[in-house]
Image (cartoon, rainbow, N blue to C red; front, side, top):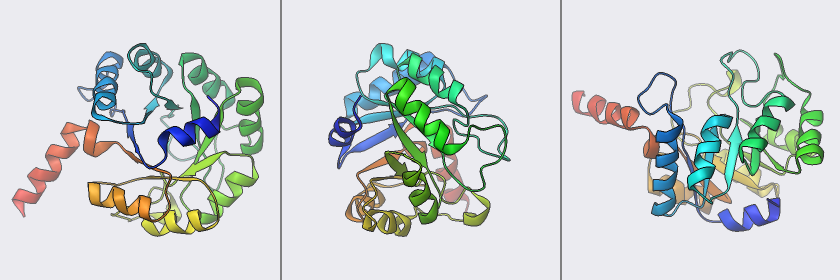
Length: 226
């Protein structure tokens, strides 16, 4: 899918991240595909999904654009689609956009950022979404050739830890630089999603609060115990 067409299709809309934590009851490709179809019926404009097998199952039931990613078990380095061979498998499964981690430092078993982005563009003919945690990382990712960025990792890197709410300020900073940005990370209400669009996000990605009933239940249980 052409990146311009993708952006036009998602602008001002909701992207749902259909993922499940390993070992949880929903961590099954067929179940995740059913969730993907359900959110499509509900009006989602695109999907975000992890793993080639899950993406292949979703592609069987949904025509929505899929942002594909591969997560590794080692979280000490780059763990979201660190290598080109992983991106290639995602493309073969039916992903339309490849999400990669573009945070600093770039450590671990990973393809250099510029080479990874270039390979996805030239060999797979797909667009690249860079998951970042800071404005500097967003700018560096775009300089390396990324097509758009997402604030996915704000609050999950050593220099952005302990953030409990969505990083609306980061969305605003990136948008003001003219960088196409998706808002993602700890969006728990429609009001927060609306605020992200008002701050310049192209679209909003929501996962846990739509697709993880175990986590949602725990939030209510904890609130009742206070």
